[in-house]
Each structure stands twice: as structure tokens, then as C-alpha cells.
Image 1 (tube, rainbow, N blue to C red):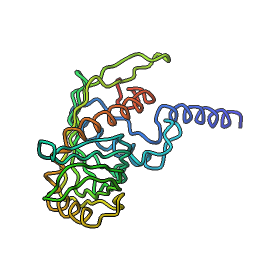
Image 2 (tube, rainbow, N blue to C red; image 1 turned 60 degrees about the vertical axis):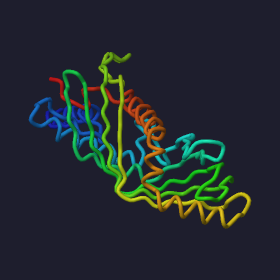
Image 3 (cartoon, one colour; image 1 turned 45 degrees about the vertical axis):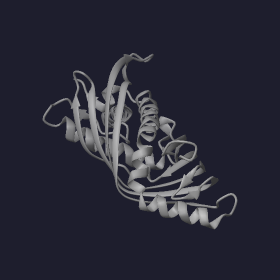
Length: 249
């Protein structure tokens, strides 16, 4: 009986240690080059699944909306050139991201992720000045956008550092990203001065030239998103030691 109780106690202790080393929200991957990329992809998608619900152990309780302070676009030159500033941008649906491919080099800690997001909804406040399709388009109101079929590539290089607990943690050394969108619908509502002609002109122009507008917004948007991604990665890496991502033995 004592031996049986001792075995149960030992099994419980080992199980507790194993559970501590293997977080429920992450899949540890072997270092084997033949398996590492596929395993890291699956592990990333497992982590995303739990992040959608919040992971208290990582001090993450919600990840949406993704917030961007502001971006601006300029169309045309001169005093009548159209300028628009979008502020307090909130994006929903980003957490539905799926990692479809990973390429990794563990020796240099370089990674490239290919990701897909079915649909992102965006809302923001905007202010515009200038002339748009022969209409004075100065005003302010609410912007909305629906971006479908979003594909992104994220490249990052990391560096390894020893934490206070003696374990190895990653921090990002550099991050780059690019993206494209298959279909875009967007518009403006609640023009401040209530001018229905301006609102109709803006919405006609925006939806007729959505990809061109995205092209104009892309440099600033890419810079902002890269910063958001980098900050989020560092937040995750600070909580998860490298040996919980990859079996280093």
C-alpha cells in the first residue's frame, strides 16, 4: 500500500513538473530540421487559438481591437490637393489569423511567417481637406472599412538573452512585414457638416479607388503595423523561454 501511494505521489510530482514545462497554450518543437517548420507553424496556431480567449499566464486577457494611433494620405499636390488623416484606428478580426507557413533558421534565429486573415473590420475618425473629383472635400466624420482575404508575410530576426531565472529568452532584433488584400469595401459616415453631396462624393471615390487608396496608405500602415507586431512579439517572448518553444536537448 505504501509503495502504491509512493508511486502515485511520484507520478503526481512528475506530472506537475511536466505540466509546468509544457504550457497548455504552446506545443514544444524538436530541433530536427525536417520537422521544425511544420511544428512551429502548428505551435503558432495553437498559441493564437488560446490568445483569442486570453492567456492569464502571459498577462494577456484580450488582443482586440488592434489599435493604431493615426495614418495619413495625400492625393495630388498644391493647395487643393486632397489630404486625409485617420485617427483612433480600431481593427477587429486580426485574431482570426492563421499561420500557413514558417521558414526558420535556428542558428541565426531568423524566421519568416506567411499568414492569412479572412476578414478585418476597421473603424476610425477621419478629417480631410482639399478637392476630390471636383468637389470641395473638407470635413470630418467616421471611417469604416472591411478588408477581405488579407495575406501577410512577417520576417523577424531575434537575439537570445539570459533571463533572471537563468533560462534563455528571445527579443526581436528586427521586424519587417508586407501584406495584400483581395477585396476592400470602405466608406465614410456622419460628415460633421452634414453635407450629403460631399459624403456621396467621398464614398464614390473611395469605393471606386479602394486598392489605389490602400496603396497610398500602405507605407504608413506598414510602419505602424510593424511596430504593433514587434511590441506584441516582445511581449510574448518575454514570458515564454526559448526551451518551451523548441526542445534544445
